[in-house]
Image (tube, rainbow, N blue to C red; front, side, top):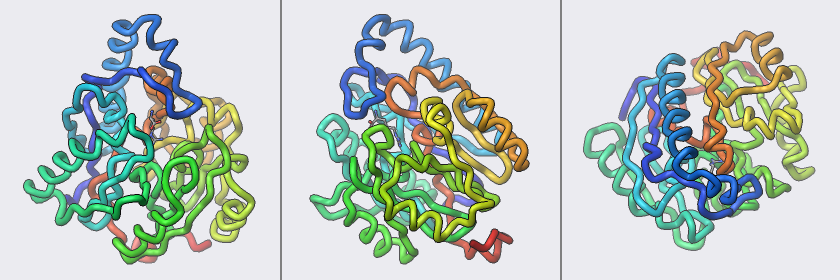
Length: 294
Ligand code: ARG
């Protein structure tokens, strides 16, 4: 498996916003100027790629496929840990066509020695990749979102495949349709999250595991800027152009922000994290990393 911090991106060649499967998606806004929008998306993608490199990542760019505009969000394609990729099963027909091309992409990564194994989930169990199953490096377990997209049962499947604890969190609103829209664990043990996105049980589970001093509550404005959807490596954070609130809060806690204008992708309901997939994550014990106890 690959050792250094490595991110998979998918080129935006075939990206557009032509359907709507979440409340942020705005095909009409895209249709007003598709060529201009596509040009902007290409520029935004290049800026994201550069910001990820500046933050210390190696970046691998896979090709997309015509008719599958949301392939540009590989966070939804698989969950990857310890060299194993568990392929996603999409809830909506608009995206399930991505399963075959993504399977080919992950097989190719395995052939190159970047992954050790690539496995499938049972049929009927929806699971939308790392967007709904987020590794918390400081605590050494997954958090799994369920409800709008992924099935509750997917959390148990992940626990079985990776032999790691998976804490299931019910998502209670259509706007936070994937966990990564409203939930971002950071390297220092902080959790950036948007409380109104969660069921009462989910909030209780979060607060039982993350002490108050490490909880950073995002505002509705932060959510609308897709700022919770951030990519973190040590003290580096790559995110969409953020709000004064989060800029101050994260900087105060010692993080260095790389802000990128990703508005053409926010029109599809995505930010920086959605557009990436970490390929090198390992389940190394939190104590080995000097993580913060809850
Ligand atoms: N249009 C895409 C969808 O609704 C956006 C996916 C964004 N990805 C994410 N991990 N939140 O599926």
